[in-house]
Amino acid sequence: MPVAELKLASIYYESVGSGPPLVFAHGAGGNALSWWQQTAFFGARYRCVTFDHPGFRHSSWKAPESDPDATYGNVLCELLDHLEIERAGLVAQSMGGWTCMRFAIDHPDRVSTLVLSATDGGLYLPTRETYAEFELELEKIRAVWQASRPGAFHPAAGSRMLSEQSALHEMYEEIGSQNDGVSRRGWGAVSEQELDRLSCPVLLVQGDEDVVCSPDRVIALHSALENSELVLVPEAGHSVYFERAELFNRTVDRFLGATYPAGPHGHTIIESFANQDSS
Image (cartoon, rainbow, N blue to C red):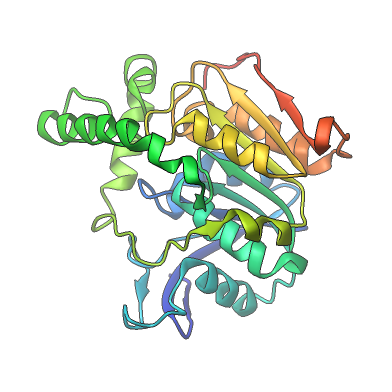
């Protein structure tokens, strides 16, 4: 089992394929296994690195909780050093967006592209207070799921995945069940002022039925970034990469190989994206 013994943590990781490095950071409902549909697709042309965040499945913290350097962004930096990866493309889901946003801001010269799926990257905006009602509703959904399994949808998978792709929903739950739990330790928020240090192109992929990360939060991040593209995916929940893998992979693949057009204020918004697959 490949484990990198770093200063801050012991990190389980997998590296498949060859080519330019592409590093995948999972969300709070997953671990390195979550990206199986992406590594199979991108592994033919990229070196795909997946890992368990500290506190998830096979990875654990070494640094005490009081250590201010014990952040996921710093752990990612140590992991890339360990793997001798100087510069990489990053693909992040939900909580993983906090990891990769923090790293991309602190080390802009080491990130070629950044894909953020269903996450605001830990961006603190004054409008966050307006999300309080949304967060309360999410806690109700989580409570129903915990009390009613099986039969209730996993919030990070979504009701549509449960009803239309029940086997995939079950797999999502099984992957998450291998974690001990979810901790907020090490996430690392960022401020709007810090976004000026983010120099790479950013792709935001957001499901329009997401009940974990409100689309409004991602739209706000898109508005705050000068070099970002937003893809809103219809009939998709919080985990587009898992629920609509073929569509997600095509979208990311196109982004990785594209020359980025300058839209208004450097933004390109795609308000809808035809769902042509059933995966």
